[in-house]
Length: 429
Image (cartoon, rainbow, N blue to C red):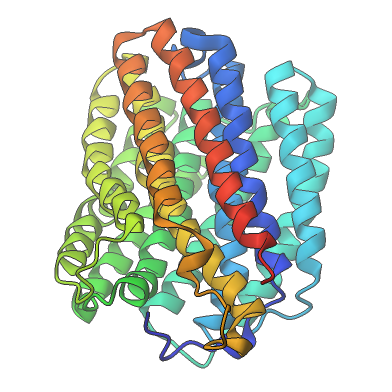
């Protein structure tokens, strides 16, 4: 593993990022339990309350928790700029987790009061997270593609949260803020392509060569991908603003279509060009040993173009299954796979860095790889891959038994991931 250029001395206290990482698998367990309980009803349409609850368990409970924890770590170590008042991260964690639990419970149970209190908790959590990290990134000594990409992803997260909290008022006893289809389109574009996709892209420039000894992607390709991803994430917001200004007429459906087309540059960059150049980089790696984390990366990168294809089908078809399938492929296949794989490398490394690095080389001191045996990681991948395949088949066939099986597999995936992270975290000798 190459650590040149990393400011490891700036790493935050272990439990700041680890609290976010360790909680994320619990969201998979809850989401899987709901899917196993409701079966085909939960995948029949994207607008059912239980479907929205499961989707937000994936986006907020798993993806966003992992990415928030990662940003605390990456801002300090990769950008070389420690986040100020880092222990406020514990308050961010508590407010965000409790707020997300309330939001999901309120949506699933139809409780406006619960959603209202969830908004009151998530709002300060977002501000307490975004402002210190934005300041740290602004004063970072480095201005490479990774740092700039992290800045763009943080902006996308703020916009996604703003839109989401605004829309959540429609579930808290107040009026929905505007045309539902347009708001959802913009929210999804900025969140999935700008926040999730933007951070995955930015982090990959550092993480892929770091853990795999693979050659870096050409700077020109990195700049093109970053530019297209940022443009495709922000243009839908411009469309929303133009609609409110009356510049696009009064057709909600037309504005939604324009917003979807506006996201096309990010679709091409995040689900097209980035997977291609990253797979080529991994194929040229100097470390020829088969690493289980590559199974997650390669699968996630291969699913990415399928996300683009299914997104096109969802755009031209009124059948709800394409939108539901897109959500499944994005959350479980593309982003879910990649973040699962990164957790399997980052958490053992952090535990080793904080607890064992000063004694490295002494008899009995484990290496970072010893904290997560390959067999465990391969088992996690097998469960995750089975979940992805069975769930996609369930959506395509509208099968209740397969949907319940996918839910059970998702529970097993969450349990396995939590077990391996807990095993690494508890090691002290």
